[in-house]
Length: 263
Ligand SMILES: NC(=O)c1ccc[n+]([C@@H]2O[C@H](COP(=O)([O-])OP(=O)(O)OC[C@H]3O[C@@H](n4cnc5c(N)ncnc54)[C@H](O)[C@@H]3O)[C@@H](O)[C@H]2O)c1
Image (cartoon, rainbow, N blue to C red):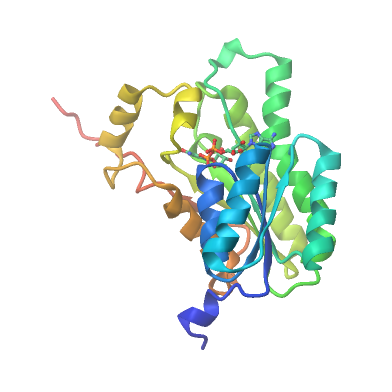
């Protein structure tokens, strides 16, 4: 039996993280690097991602790579793979974390908005994974983790573009898992509401809406990015080597409402 240190030893592993300059992506990058991984941070926000890659390398001493990548552009994803392999010679794991969704009413969307949400939340993850596969297949316990959302497995008419795209993501991951065992593992996180600073407001949440949600959450708080980073590291680690095709829900217990009449 392995020790906990051996199970979570990521030394010599190369892990690509998309959306790495954001709240969850940056904590996942930092935590995986602290465990010894060579992390490849990719994000549309060039300034932020380059600074973060260099800060993390200084903090942990493990070499990183930062790269501006637009995950809606297939050629940029190919360039990211090439840069990763040129620098580190392999890919051991991927965190498909990029994603975003605006608050849109069910009948207030249009074709282009539906397509744009799909390209960012689903297609980008498909392409990053597809181009990583030849390298992942060569590695022991290769693992790919996806940032899913509660909106993708519950009715979410307020976020019709985003929730439809995230629902597609979940089923895509299940298909990848059954087609790729035993070579590569694929798992999704179903992420509950996590404090990501300004992004929540941009997505249409007001403080009042957030306070209301928190009241109902079993753990009585929103998640912090570290809560998700730890779960990602678990699914990438040797501790999860027999786990594939699952959805791990990390949502503080969810929102509970009594089924009994209250008056
Ligand atoms: N925060 C939450 O409450 C929550 C809940 C459920 C699921 N999620 C999912 O978790 C993931 C991370 O969320 P977060 O809260 O850290 O988000 P965030 O907004 O903090 O970070 C998202 C990052 O993605 C980058 N990005 C946007 N478009 C891009 C593109 N085209 N190419 C490359 N990068 C791009 C942004 O620059 C940003 O750094 C997302 O997939 C999100 O849908 C988050």
